[in-house]
Image 1 (cartoon, rainbow, N blue to C red):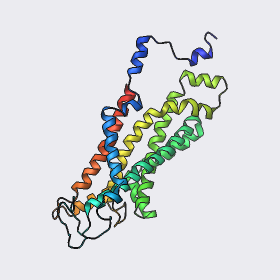
Image 2 (image 1 turned 60 degrees about the vertical axis):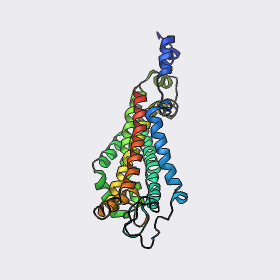
Image 3 (image 1 turned 90 degrees about the horizontal axis):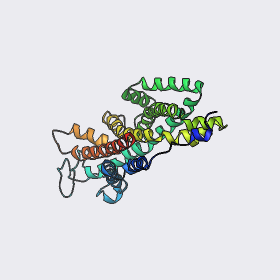
Image 4 (image 1 turned 180 degrees about the vertical axis):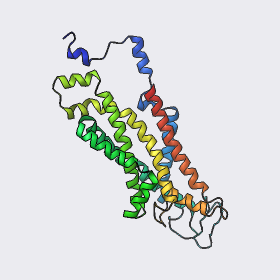
Length: 294
């Protein structure tokens, strides 16, 4: 052989100028500590803090009815006003954030984890690849709301249905992205060298392939979290999401639209929170995407 396995697996020598350029390139974690990434993380932190501290910050419980406070406008006593059954909208908004946080930070990562696992397995063996791709095609053939309606017919409306829909929607997204990334990484010289020296498939996946496929997956994770907020909002708006009287941001906006003429202030507070949450996730995803391109 004209070159050894060590030569194949080792990176090419770089000049001091090249090394300096590489040090200046923003990595994934560096991108989150400045500019858009930092702004997005701060905004996410504020929204998360509001949701976690709801029992402390909310002047009323999410379902408490206040005597004589029917569709009262914003004031010092009720920052976002009250609804048609005398409940404080600000308090319900804080508790509603919790619902969206469950969707964003639990349902999306679970769907991503299952999709990544299936994508890893399917990218390595032909039989599993054919089966997984047909399952992904079947899921992607249904629009999200049609899938939500179908699941609601079996399990009924509620947070559990929203959870299942988001997991089902994200699974093929991460599965196909993982498959594409893995097929690209496995052609790299260091993976071929590991295969030649006798490393097993699982060891190659764990040691080389998955760590070097994480950057696009992290970008997609941030994007999918922002999409999940819209899915929850759309399902709750259609009555397929969280059941009354428990609040969610989507159900609060739905109630605000229903009372738009009598109380135009109703949906403003929850809508601002939704915009802040989605904007923060998009800022993080843009920062990660820019770091990856760099």
